[in-house]
Length: 197
Image 1: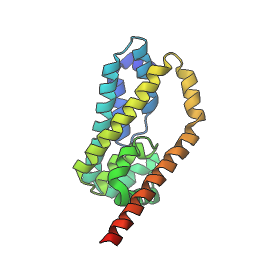
Image 2: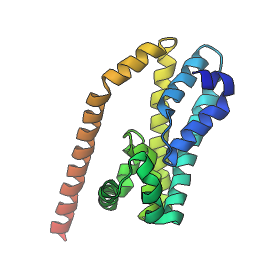
Image 3: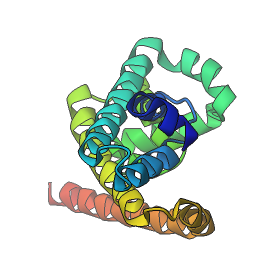
């Protein structure tokens, strides 16, 4: 909150953008805090929405470009510092290879994948057009969610943080369940299509 009060919109943009290229930042907390400040008239809500969305998509696309240019070896050398080990990257690559186009939409809501989805998608050479459209949809949904939470929370930021921390695990379980369900439907449809041929 102090960072936002001191540096305002540039801090919001920088912290959200850096997260998209794999640098761990408190982007969610910053977006919520910016929306709270906007609710108190200290920031403009439309600007918070525009900057958050723009920085999220720009950061992810910069991550995509870095992944495409640097490739796997550089990502692994740098990624170890943020927990992106070779086995984790290999699992993510297999996952993206099978369901890459669709996982990009929900990647923003999964901690760890939110920070690395652009890097991984670029490194495995997912077509940029497929990536950027889905990333923009995910970025818009993510922005809408956290700005809405901040706007509704108003001055209750501390209570909101405690609530988010308390329900973080159940939320991740629900998100994983939804992801598995979508994956199963995809596999089922694909098998039906193969049998039909």
